[in-house]
Length: 243
Image (cartoon, rainbow, N blue to C red; front, side):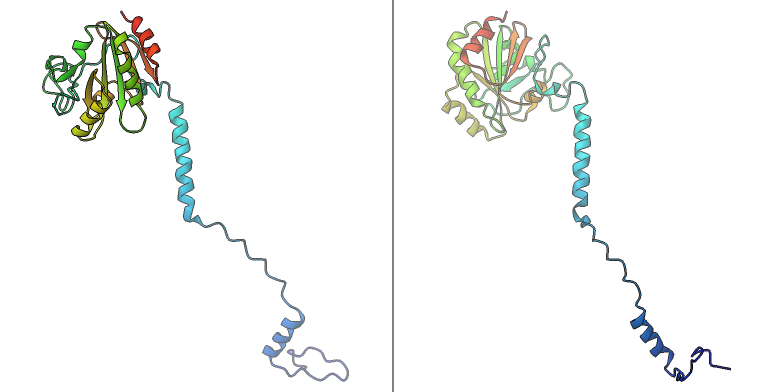
């Protein structure tokens, strides 16, 4: 019986005496395996995948906020018809230093002031209750984030034309008191300038940008709040509408 390893031999054929390993090697040469699939293109590194995820999340959050009605309400100052919030603040040139009193009524919340703001009667403070006994123009200025001082300069220049109207500025600054006083003197502001050193008055009045100017009738009822620069003529025209 023929050896199954060699198969059937034809006439004159020699038996294949190669080892199994040699026969497999020859088969690999004569019947090569199909080429393997080309390697997959490597995917982009996921090193920055979290950045894309955060960016997408921000887009979702912004879109959600944008859908909220009156979302910017807190940035534009007191509403027309509302009553001016009460406060007393140290006058820049008085030598008095400290945070403003924003207590509306007794008992006073912690850090708002030890007594209601209207009771802080002193020549060293800007008392909004006293100012509101007449028609009032109140302008807000910051020393960072915006160029607010030119608007206060225009209010200062308009003072001679604003007779019968209380005029004051709220100066929000965290700078040293000496630096604040020097700036007021250098710009020759003679109007009342109250210093909002911790931002309490600015927050109380919902002022998110400057210049912001509030026009109020006698008694402190807000007539109009304007965000942005005003000319001297515009200031005078608005003042004439106050009662």
